[in-house]
Length: 259
Image (cartoon, rainbow, N blue to C red):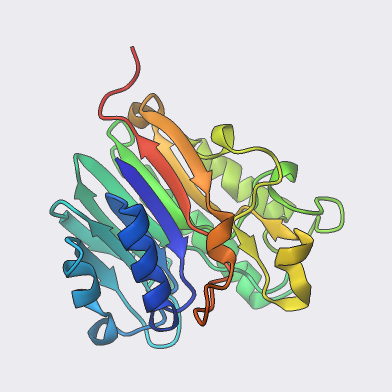
């Protein structure tokens, strides 16, 4: 089962870009963030024509998350206490796995009230996740806006204390992971593999990126992770199609764990 997460940074702007990707890569399950569309504006037919069922929660101009699958999605849940009323979480079960698609706050700057909100968001998210059955197959995936380690950011010394790589964020990350979550991507990609590059100052061409898009799995799925990748080529312009500032992250899950 190929699972993909991607912050598309406006589904309206990236619809043709995404359609080409879905046709070529054909993921079994995918999670999108930053739709930046109200529910009524989500192009559902674009997905259904390709054999996907989709569930989503949208918001005008901001946020918005979506889950898509080739098999039915059941037990859909939207939002959680502490999300500020924003469209930042959607969960559903498909292929025997519970998927939780997340778009966590960026935080703006370490001195901003938005940073305080980010830390509180993570605290409330952790409380919500802790109530799940973490002994069952669960995948948390999406743009989580934290680079966990020095291998996940282009300048760990210069960026130390900045949003995305702040000690308080790392504390929240460790507490979340301590619930029983495992990074499905890190063991399969080399250090310096990033999923996000700022649009400004030529960051992409300079290699100034961060790995802030994640696929986290519970223990029953660890042995089913066959491989993982981040497709840097999807951050490049394709003819007249402008890319997101994020690249898609993929994980292949075996049907059964290795013996």
